[in-house]
Length: 140
View 1 (tube, rainbow, N blue to C red):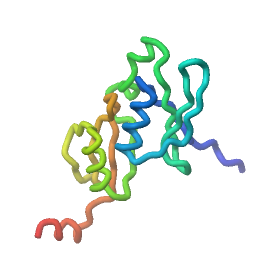
View 2: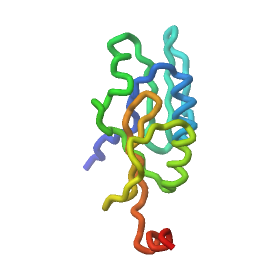
View 3: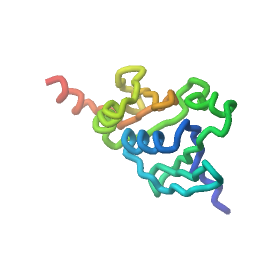
View 4: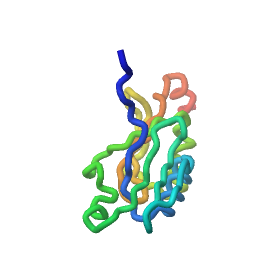
């Protein structure tokens, strides 16, 4: 049996390559994987984690594309980040200027908070659930 294809990269519409690189690397701790010049004014810019899903930053080429910057998910959360250290990632996002649409909350699947990136795309930051032992130590 063959292995089905795996998602390894997706495009995210951006206004400007450099502002997007700066924000996503600072706010999410991602790295710049590739930045290769293409046709005049175009670049192939990939960010993320080398061994994980990567994001191709696609600068809008015209007004029709520009109208979708920050709205690729139709106003819904459509990007989901799994966090090994929720508090540290939450603090880094806050310091980078992410706009939180709520305070962190606990769900059966973990701690979660919705934030908007510099363009208004809505993301979930999801960490491990708070255990009963950890929860009681926070209360004391």
